[in-house]
Image 1 (spheres, rainbow, N blue to C red):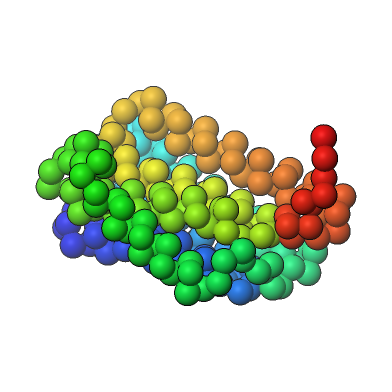
Image 2: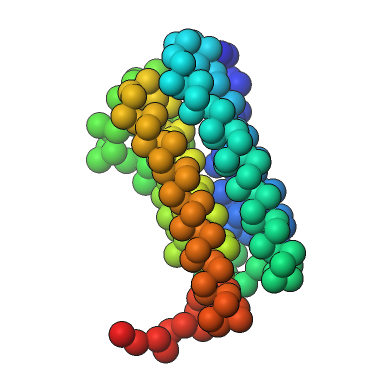
Length: 215
């Protein structure tokens, strides 16, 4: 597949993560997650078209059904059930968050990460951007106060890791393919149980209100 189109898909993934940091409504955050999961599905399908790997086709179908369709549907229903229209605020202000994102983007190009970003020299820029997406997703998990955004942040980081694996040429590994499928199901199960338990016990998904909890 054309490298420009692959760059576009990775750009969609990265911009969707940035949007998740800025979104004020949970509905918008879920839409952004659905868009990035669709982009990952297309990236995996592009890899399948080049390799004709049947196990990889299975991964594509699972990713499409679970991450691009069932995952967003689950979050939409959760939002409607508990009337969670607006997302809880972040720890850092928007300007500081954008500065940190820019810093992560610069750090991903440091020489210390060259063993990772030069696994395939022709994909250096793509691997650097994928690495930056991983860092930004981690920051999303830390900076957001509500459980839904944190769960979506974890799933976004998983999407970023899959994107990195694709551009590093690792997606053909049977163990990695099995790991992707396992990861998809496990994280959705964890998100379901985690969010439901928090809301049932605290009546809110604002994790900052749980600072007083002690062992």
